[in-house]
Image (cartoon, rainbow, N blue to C red; front, side, top):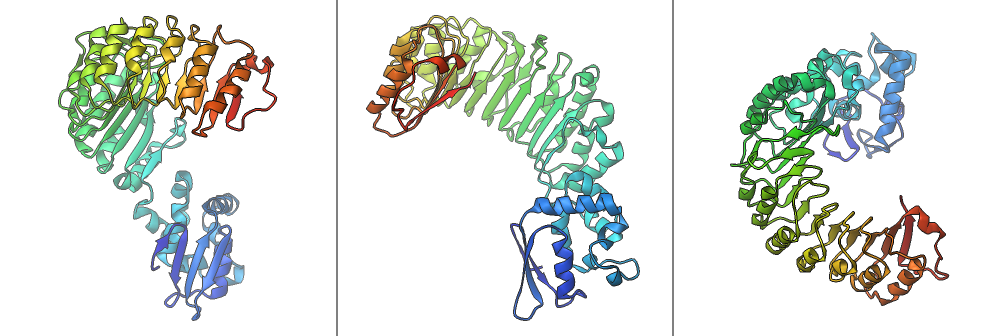
Amino acid sequence: MRGIISDELMIDLRKKQVSRGQLKEILSCCGEVDIMFDATGKIVVVKFQNKCHVIRTLTTRLVSYNFNGLWKSLSPKSEILNDDSPIENLPEDCLIKIFSFLPIVEKLLIERVSRKWREIGVQGWPEMKHLRIPSEFRKFTPSQLRQIFTRSGRFLRVLEIPVINEETNCLPLIKKHCFQLNELSVHFNLKAFPKLQVFCEDFAGLFIACEKLTSVKISGVHSNFDFNCLEELVKDKIRELRLYAPSSGLATPLYLNLRGFNFLEELELKGFVIDEEVLIGLEELGNLTSLSLVNSKVHVSHVKKIRELRKLEHLSLENIRSEVNDETMEEIARSCSNLKSLNISHLDRLTDHSFEQISQLRSLEKLEMMGLTRVTNDSISGLFTLKELRCQDSRGIGNIGFIRLIKWAQDLSELWVDGALITEDFLLEVNDAMEYRTSKVKLHLHLHSDAEDWEQPRNLSPLLLLSYTW
């Protein structure tokens, strides 16, 4: 084969014992294909219309004919000699391409069809750059898991995998085979908690071996997780670190030393108890562009450190339990002038004063401020750079504030509203306000289902889209 372009194959038949008719017969059984010969009839370009057809055909044949019968079924019996099948006369690159279409389970099974397919499987699965093993992967035996990582490990760049129990713990296999891994996502099942410290030892070894890791995500981080294993990461390579406590509502204490992660760009800590002395070096992350502390109990001293993160573009403090007041928020907005998205939902100490400084963020495009009980229409009066605003349950904001924003925030395209001060003629006022917008940007307005009973505009602006989404 001269080359592969997408799902196209170029096959040189000059040295192959397969006829033009056989080729058409063989490949037509692998789904919808276009077959074009050159003038000599020896160079063929094959284009698979849909690789799913190949997968469906192979899996169906595998069930119906089982192993050796699989490929025999692709040609008339008269053409099958000495237990061989014409498809195995195709160039190896063609077989590799077909093999690459198969899901993991079929890859494992088809290796048992014939020696030729096993030879292809043993060469590895170079197309397997991204592997996501679902939580129900108990269907794989330990032997099959070893085979999967033996075949694909050296090619993997992105891996998502659960750890349910010791039998399904693939961390040692990742350490052994996945030296090229860039992104790792691991989910610990609740049943793994009693052994979580043992798994952390596996993590430490894995982090040492996988030197090219740039992104690490770990969910199900319980109280007996040993955060010291993160010390084994190659710190100057890590760009993204995300840790998630269980969603069970149990308080999970955090201890995290971030010193040395000088090139970290994205940090997410969700559902933790972050006391004063347990988050070290946050203020030293000079290259951080995204920070999320959602659903955590955070000592206010850490929130105040955020003002040192001058490159920050995305900040989420949604639903954190902390003593964050207007002064703290103003300091953050003043120092982090590059913010593009901000989530301060349910920080119920904030008032309109915070927004005097937030409105000065000239790059701010997305703001989430749900459940702010002390703000009024004035809070959104100067947010003219916004493209997206969510402020459900901020009940001090009504028609006046939203209409003013719609008129003057020319690029506003997504707006979620709900509140006691919004009246039933709101849609009429919004429709009229659309005439003031010269940008021609469509506005998608998301409302509570109760708003379906409000008076509707007779001539709805073509730039106004209404959704009743909750």
